Length: 146
Image (cartoon, rainbow, N blue to C red; front, side, top):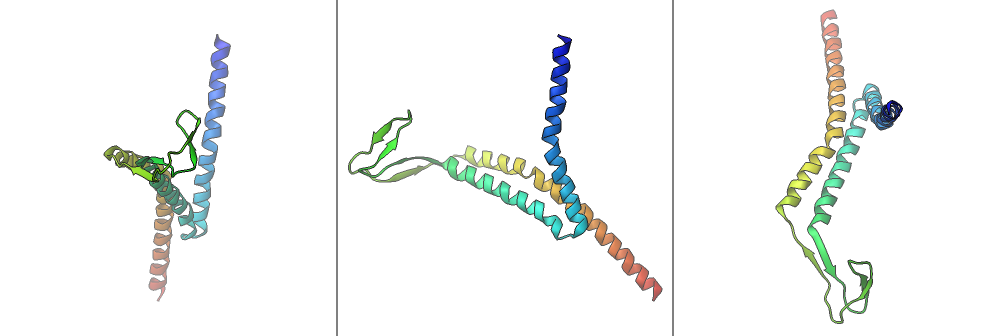
């Protein structure tokens, strides 16, 4: 019994390491990019923001579309996986229903998917503020020498 719990704890440690390693590498990459150049530090926050917008907009778009009727002559796959012939003379119609809960879900997904954007942006702001402070100190030293 004790051996199973030790193996479980060991497995949990390995699992956490595997999950945290990519996150730590991305944070280290962001720090390195910010140290190289302030403009390079905007790459990861921009990519993260674009991916979160893509995820949110696709969720909102596909969540609103409910179903379609195929035009005559063709067939489509029914809900139980069987091929159903289309009705003759049927018109193509896409039903779009937008519920308020879709908007709420899209807002929550947007906020959650922007957590990396906030982290990368915070790192960028820290290094930008540090660089601005150092530049101000250099400027003040040059003015004091004159």
